Length: 628
Image 1 (cartoon, rainbow, N blue to C red):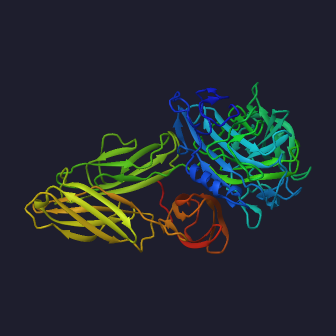
Image 2: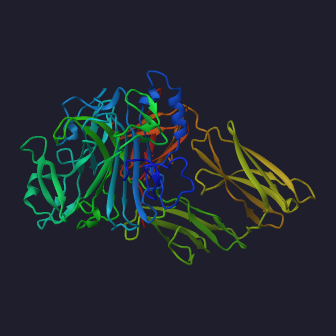
Image 3: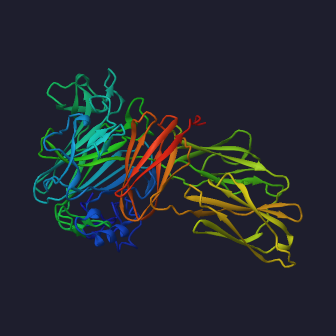
């Protein structure tokens, strides 16, 4: 932590540590430092700010970016769990607490949002968060890093990073919070009689920056008041307890480490410093390159030392995430029960990519005895194990790829780390065709392009005089292909020939389409080409949900003509709101992954809302089989 956002730079001098962003001009510096936040679309955002005019809709809008690496990635021998950057709403803020009505200790059900400006000492500009382990293992020390910029640079500032176990969310239309916990709006920590933690709950870190620096961080956990009579094993009660009232059953109790020494560090930038590749939008909607001195604050907390690490709990899941969502708030004063002011709406965390596999030879032939099956989206922290119900795997059954030499069904199971329970699985079938064969360089070129409502395929071969015909096969998932047309070989004695094929894609409701060639040779052999993947345009004003029906994961694809916010509301068949998410659309095609593993099978209505339109889509969730 250095009070700056530049990787490998410490107050304009060389530093080899990690940081939030890659600083321009640091190429060639030592490589054992890296940046954390994904900067995709930064140039487009800056260009949008440059052309934005009063009342500055783009400058006032919020957006967020995740970690530059997939969650649960090992980087520089550390396990990066997740990270987040959020630009809060500016000017007339749409995520602000109603004056005096909302306080820590109250249930989020009683918090009330509004749209208004906030005092500059409370106005959040940007927020950052990063959670990682000190080493590559799930038992190494767990660290939480937070960063916050506030408009005011001289006054005392107070804020909270609140960590939730539930999928809490904020609905800007009703200006209320939903999805909060069962214990007076939170999730309470549970202990056995000996003081061991048997169930984690919500956590809050309250920070105070006074006199130009961090003066303290108070850690609190949500508990039943009766738990204060228990002597915890992992930490010590700090003596403070605040709920909705002085007699509340549930509230936030302060905790301190059992071992000597501080559990946190923090500082603010002592002088003007670079604000990052997204620049900085001030409270008056001006766009600047640098933070003023004292405008950016950082802190870190060792959650293991504090006793709040899930890996240390009895019966805890060392592979589980320490929390699900984060809410950042500012307070009117140092008091924990002071009125809440500005907030950054709840955001998702720890959504690791779910495994997806493809085979280089989905059909085994008389002369093609093996096929390699490979994970298409590997995470270097995940462990992949392979099984088959009726086939045969040669060699190792762990890793990101396997070699098989028999037809059958092959299953890969993903664990986020060694010793974890299964996180995701994918299945692929290999078939056998006794009449087929595979020859090298049969197809010297196979390409495709999209033109309007058509896919244009072109290929060349250097053994034309040995080919009878080509079957063109199409797939929507890259795994299951069907024949859509046949092209006879050109009557020629020459070896070289060029071919083309046109496919109508106007009715496809997918962002991708895959093609391959099945080549019938005159010698009664069958040859398969490589696979061509084409990106399909998504017209403005429309959106795609795929696959549909889905099981535990669905992807949302949507095009946008500008940078803007997308709100997704999901209703079940009774009309109840079961999901409320906000995405940041960049200009062009956007694809988001949505975890539907906890949704019940059935029909859902998905409402997608942008600045200028509302789109409704029907989504079917099917029951998913057990992970094997």
